[in-house]
Amino acid sequence: MFDAARYDREVLRPLRGTHGHLPPGDLLARYAVDPGMDAAALARHLAEIRAWWRERARAPDFRAQVCKLLIQADEELLRTVGDAMDDPAWWREQAHLSPTAEEPAAHAAPVAEEGPVAPPDWRADVRAQFWSALALLDRVSSPHSAVPADTAPDAATTSAATTGAATAGAATPGDDERVTHDRELRVRAIGATGDRARVELTWPAGDARWRVLCSPRPTPFADGDVVTRERAEQWGTELPGEPVERGGLVVLEATVGTGYLCYQPFESGRDGERAGRPVGLMIAEPVRQLRVDRDGDGAVASWVWPAGAVTAEAEFAGARLTVTQAEYTAANGLRIAEARAGGDLVVRAHTPVGDGLAHSPPVTVTLAPAPAVIAYDLRKRRRLAGTDLIVTVTADRDCAGVDLDVVLAVGEFMPLSRDDGRLVARCPGLMLTAAEPLRLTLPLPDVPKRDRPYWIRCFFDAPFDVAPDDPDPDRMRTR
Image 1 (tube, rainbow, N blue to C red):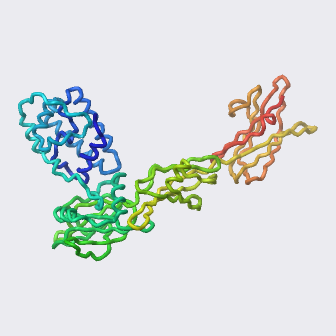
Image 2 (image 1 turned 90 degrees about the vertical axis):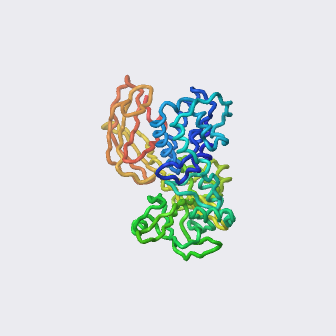
């Protein structure tokens, strides 16, 4: 059985930040294949993991880039190997050729005892050499460092980043050695106040002097690209401040906005600016799936809390409310008492970072105004010349351009639409003032006794939502 969570952890995450083509790796781990599978199980598994790649390729995070590369590599492998991929013996061959055969693939089923191995194929040797170094990738990321930048952050990245920011500890000596060896930029949050956060950037000390640019947009530059200074600054803004050398590292502290930012170092040279490897850091992840639903005169807001958030601030119609996770859970959402006029609901999550509280970027959803309630009353007035129908209309707010249709229907049942009766009067373009009755005098049609009982009901049209409020049925029916 394919274990998606383990595959994400052991295969996708080590490939974060990969651009252009995949590095060499273990073919069985890449496909999460159990060498003990029979032909039918293998065919089902390959179809499942390829469908999973296609689904994850649409994800708004680093997985999209990695899965697109996996799909491209799979197509190339199919062109090279062909039908051999459907043969369990070919995969058992890969298990013997893999340098990491002692590591289990990302699936839950136990590895069955291997049967006889088919004679080696030169194509398998070529493929095994190409995919030979997945285990050499570093699968452990420090909680105090940022992650390689891709198109967008994911929830797990956010959790790691905010946890590292909250503890705000210094990197261990082992971490320093790794940074010096890899010549990589590292970023961690060390504090925050509101929508501003303090970050610490470190990179190895050396002859080259880096300047670091940041942007909320994904970087278009790969590690090693040489670009002009103007093009680099069209993408991002240089972080201000004076770097200092400390313990073999260059340290720069800067203040940035909360949310996701991509950081990329540039080294100035005679040919232009040489880009280094970018990293991304999420500080105070925003809420997700924000929605607001009307509940009578009020409304109920709901959202998915980001990892690490302790409170959230909601702003609606000029009022601000702060709610804890416990209060939100107890009330099944955030209750808004008065929401008839509608408006924009803006929610920010509050996440501890260092010794401060970071406010996430705002997320906004719009609540449409409640339908205008238009009530009416019917009354008959007898005169010598005939009988009048007095229609009194009242709205709960100012309304312009309201059309009124008066419909008469014969029979025992009240008309539910204009089509259930005949139109006896039409009053277009009414102007209604809130809480002020508008009185209309209309001629009452003469209905023979044989056609009784009959109903009179009003229907309204307007360029906005309307909720008609009918009078008592006895006032609409005549026997």
